[in-house]
Image 1 (cartoon, each protein chain N blue to C red):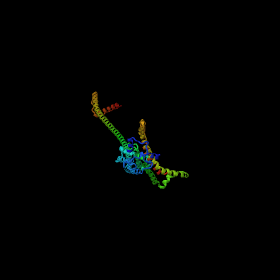
Image 2: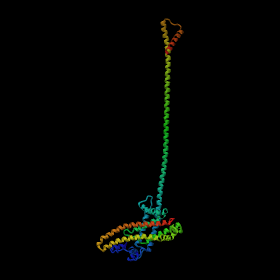
Image 3: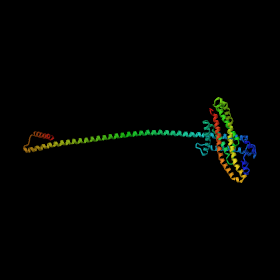
Image 4: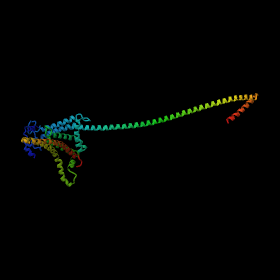
Length: 265
Length: 179
C-alpha cells in the first residue's frame, strides 16, 4: 500500500512492474525488506478474517424464523454454498461439509476482492502461501474423509485402480496416482494464485504504463488516458475472475471430497 | 519467466515459493475464522433452517387438521339440515292431516246438526199437521152436522151413529184426496 502509493506519488513508477512489486516492505518493523510477519498482506488476511467473523456473528446474533435483511443475506451465502455446491456435488452427505466450504468460499472471495478494493488493491492470494495452505487443507481433508469412509486399502484401491482391462492398468495406475495425489493440490493452489497474480500484474501494467507514457512524452497523454480506461475495464474483468476463482476453488474441493466418498471409481 | 522477472526486480523473490511466515499467519487466521464460523454461526443456521422447515410443515399440518375439522363440521351441518328438512316435512304433513281431520269433523257435525234441525222441523210439522187435521176434523164434523141438520131439519139424536157416519165420510174424503 505504502510502497505503491509512494511510487505513484513521486511519479517515478518503475515500468514494467516486476515480482518485487508484490512484496511490499514490512509494516512492523517499519520498512524492513525481508520481514514477513506483519506486512500489508498479512494485515489484509487478518482484516478479512475480522470482517467475516464480525459480519456473521452480528448478523446471526439473534436468528429469527422470519429473517431480517442482514440475516437473510448471511443465510443466503451459506445457503448458496450448502445447496449449490455441497449438496449438488456430494449429495445429502455434503451438508456436513457445508460449513467448511462456506468458510473457505467466503475467505477466498473476500481476500480475492481486496485485489480491486481501493487502498487494498492487492490480493493476499497473489502470494502463493495462502492458496497453498488452503489447497493442503483440501488435500488432507479429501484423503482423510476417503480413508475414514472406505478404510485405507479400499480407499486407495478405489482411487488408483480404475475399472479397466488388466493389461491397461500398468499405464493407468501411475496416471491416477499422479493426477489424484500429486497434481491436485498443486493445480488447486496454482490456479488461484496465478489468476490473482496475473490480475494484479495486468492492473499494474496498465496503471503504471499510463504514468510511464505520460512521463516519457506529454504528447502520449491520450494514450495514457486510454491505458487508464483499460484499467477500469480490466477491473471489471478482475471482479469476474475474483468470483469465479473463489467458486472454482470451492467446487473443486467439493468434487475431490465427492470423489473420495464415491463407492465406484 | 518468473525467475527472469524476479531477477529484473530489486529483490530476488520467487513467487512460486511460499513465504513460510505467511503460511503460518494464514493458517492461524484461517483457523480462527473456521473455528468461529463453523462453531458459532453455520450450525445455528442449520438449526434455523430446520426450525423453519418444521414451522412450515407444522403450519401445513395444522391447516390440514383445520380443514378436516371444517369438513367434518360441514358434514354434520348437512346431516342436521337434512334431518330438519324431513322434520319440517313431517310436521307439515301432520298439520295437513290434522286440518283435514278437523274439517271432516266440522263437516260431520254440521251435517248432523242440519239433519237434526230438519228432523225436528219435520216432526213439528207433522205434529202441527196432525193437530190441524184433528181440529179440522172436529170442526168440519160439527159444521157438516150442523149444515146437514139445517138442511135435513132434523137433529140426529144418536151421537154414536152420527160420529160413525161423519168418520166414514171423512175417511172416504181422505182416501180420495191422497190418491
